[in-house]
Image (cartoon, rainbow, N blue to C red):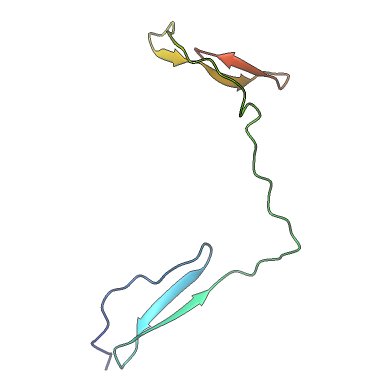
Length: 88
């Protein structure tokens, strides 16, 4: 006969881990957590860096040919340089 004192609950989780809980016959939650094995010798993937981050940017917007509003922003051109674009 299952316990009657268990309500609904969400166990605290961790990224990549799976936690499951069951109500035992005494009315208590019994939880178990299984996490994947992490190989500490493998470096994490690099975090992509926005190449134009931190460059000064003028603060203006224009009406584009399609009638939409385009504001100044950086794009990376074909040779990898940052350039200011207003309308795509």
